[in-house]
Image 1 (cartoon, rainbow, N blue to C red):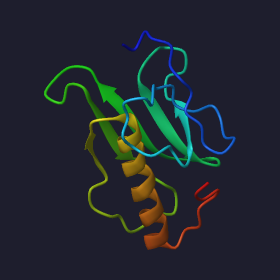
Image 2: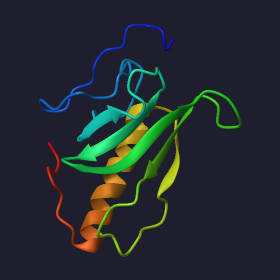
Image 3: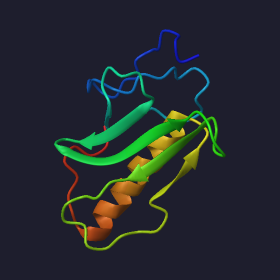
Image 4: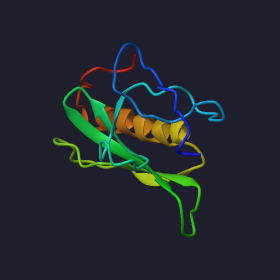
Length: 121
């Protein structure tokens, strides 16, 4: 499946973005820029960016107990002093995992009084 030609997801004119086929993905389109973590190596692993700030990651788990699931997590963000619970987890699709990262990031920034760089598109 991951050998197929992937459609490029779009967010407002921001690119590059994660290369995953959105056909069977029930989640909303991403609001931030998503870049391959290991560009050109074929991993299904992406980092979220708000301007120059990296803030989260999603990656596909092909084996193990969470096989065929997407792990999402929030990175350390400079200036964050107060954290919120549930800063990582699992979702069945890349768009749903990206939504968890983006929603948590926006709540975390508001909780700490840190402005977003680009905000929602």
